[in-house]
Each structure stands twice: as C-alpha cells, then as structure tokens.
Image 1 (cartoon, rainbow, N blue to C red):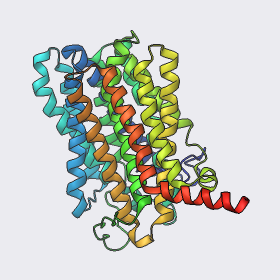
Image 2: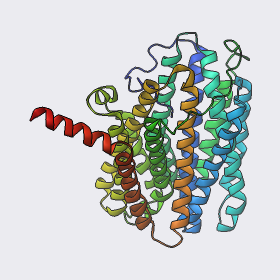
Image 3: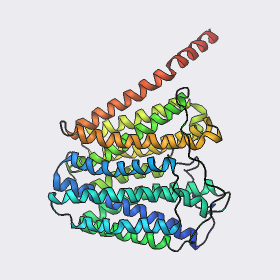
Length: 412
C-alpha cells in the first residue's frame, strides 16, 4: 500500500526542494519504472506468441510476484537500507538481463528466459525496498508527505506511459527493440543514481522491525486487508489474461496489451475519487467492501465484452476504483491505528497485497489449464464480488441491522 492521503495532488512536486540531486532522483525513478513496464509488456506478448498458452504467461508473472514475496519476507526482520551506489548496482544488474531477453526467439528459449525474469524481479524488488528507505534520508526533515506524494505520482504516471512505451516498441519495431529500450532506460536510471550523494545519513538509529497487529478484534483491519487482497487479485489476474483477450475476442495485435494496461493507468492517473469526503459520508467498511466488490465485478464484466470501447471504459473504471481503494485503505489504517502500531499495520497491508498477487497469478495459471480465459476471469470476478459482500455482512451485518432498527423505532 503506497498511496498517501494527498496522493491526488495536481502539483505533487510543488513542495519538494529544487536542485540537481532531486531531479536526478525522480528522473531515475521514472526511468526505472518505464523500463520495467516496457519490458513486462514485451515479455508477456512474446511469451504468449511463442507458447499460445495463458498458463505459461501466468508462470512468468508468478515468478516475478514470488520474487517480490521473498524479498518482502526477508526484509520483514531485516529492514533494507541501501545508498545510491547500491541502488545503481541493482538497476545496472538488470540491464544485461533485459538485453538477454532480446535473444528469445522460439518456445524452447522460454526455459532459460524464466530464470532471467525471476532474477530481474528479485533485483527490482530489492530496488523498490531500498528506495523506500532512501527517499526519507535524502529529503529534508518535514518533507515526508511531499516525498511520498511525489513518489506515488511518479508510479502512477509510469503505469500509464510505461505500457504505452512497450506497445509503441512492439507496434513500430519488435520485441527485441522493446527489450533494448527497457535495458537502456535501466542504464539511464543507474547513471542518474550515481549523481546523488554517496551516502545519506539516517535520522537516528534504525527502527525496530515492525510487528504485525492482532486482527482478531480489529474488523476494520480485516476489511482493509481483504479490500487490498481483492484489488491485487484483480490486478494480477488481468495482467496475465489481457494479452489473450487483446489478441482473441478483441482481435487486436500484441501491442494491444500495452494499450489496455494504459486504460487502467489513465484511471489511476485521474483518480482517486475524493476519499476523505466519501469517508465522512459513508461508513469506512462499506467503502472498502464496495470497492473490492466493484473491482471484482469489473473484471468479470471485462471477460464477457468483445467491444473494445466498452472494455477500455471498464478498465478505466477499474483503475479509478483501484487507486481510490488504495487511498481509502491508507486513510482508514492511519485513522484507526495508533502511531506505535502503524508500521506493523502498514506491513500487514503490504503482505495482504502480495498474497493477493500470488493468489491471482496462481489461480489464473491453474484454472486456465481446464477452462477458457474468459470463463476463468468470470468465475474469479464473481467469486471475489460475492466474497467481499459476504465478509462485510459477516463482520458488520448485525451492527447495521440493529442501527437501522433503532432509527426506525426513533422515527416511529
């Protein structure tokens, strides 16, 4: 969970100090993310073209997700703290991996491409974890909120333009060009990181490892974790399946994958909806459960529509709902958790997100072995919507029934 409460600011860099180091930091981050998204779009398109199999595409996505899960578990008790030089090495280490993927030309090459993707995913996850600790150390005191907001804005912009860059490379050239472009962007990110100060002193001692909160008597945390879990399931399920939808029912080229992902990115860029106002008017559990159910229902709808404008519109709404869900969850956790317990609560939400990513990739991979991709998305979407609604009823149904009954008696 990465969205800050004011992530929807239209001027995310306004409060940050100007200077060469700051520009290098954010351009490096944007270059890294653009390269990673362009590589991913080209990779999934290439794997599906060579194999014609959604389960094999799912295995490649699952490899990346599992690498992130391993890094997250490892850093749980050993918080990672990297300087700019170490992050530059992590970016540079992915350059030959991305470039080597340009040599993949037959289905038989996929067996050695999978370890490359796994290694690239691990290095990328380490880089993400390291940047999360580096940013607060490079920025002046009192800039935490502005820094987080700028970081979220860069991620959202790259989610929009990264897939488009991959789609452009695929449509104008080929997958080899897309991998070379991605490798070049990673090399640029590494070079820019070398322009930063060699070390950044941390403010005081390293924080102790975050402890996970007790969920048994915290229904709001359960609801928040469930909403983020559902959002992650939807996101990764679509990531695996969209290439089959683009080249199948929608009758588009492989580059259509990047365009469809960009529709989600546009929704995330436009959003989030005014979460603070919504939280003041509607119950927080209702918003979280409703957003999770809406995301799942949206995925089910995408699987049944063969009209491109309709699919693009629903993907836009999914992006809008996803970023709103993330922002609402962030606000809900901060409002309901003491400061001393906040790191553990945030860590729990991140674990719920990763669990959802693994579940989504594994479910689509296994179910597509026996069902069509449209049937799989429909089943997962309907199940997700029903499960989100059932959890809300189980946790809060009696409370709201009693509340409405009291209102009825009062009005009578």
